[in-house]
Image 1 (cartoon, one colour):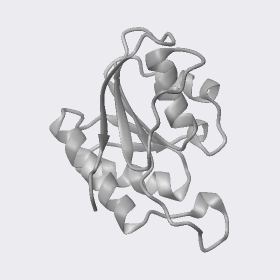
Image 2 (cartoon, helix red, strand yellow):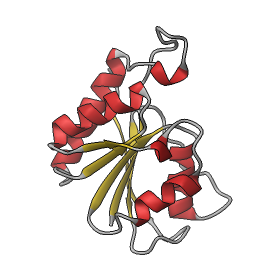
Image 3 (tube, rainbow, N blue to C red):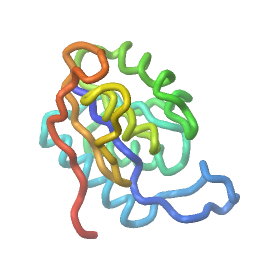
Image 4 (cartoon, rainbow, N blue to C red):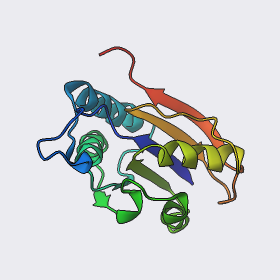
Length: 156
């Protein structure tokens, strides 16, 4: 399987409601997400399922990715703020064939990428806002995945 782990694009510091989950993407965050959608489409990920956190900045990122990929987006509780890797692994396991994109938040996105590629106890992949880790997985075992690429738009 090919898995793309995406950390949402750059978000506003505060939201209109004061709630973290209502923070929206900045212009830079929208540009990052659009660029990722185009880049992933060119890499052959068009039509891949996108699973996303319900938080505004993640959904906005997923929607812009979907525009570039022509992909469906599903909101899932397991990718929400404060979720654990143990919440996310069943999502990956249930889509073990084909291509899947996950859009969520740190520290979970970086921890998941690190767990899948280097194993338990390491966090050597630090996903910045608007970045993605492309991981090839033959077997869903910690450390068995191969990091194919890290993507992030340079500049504005």
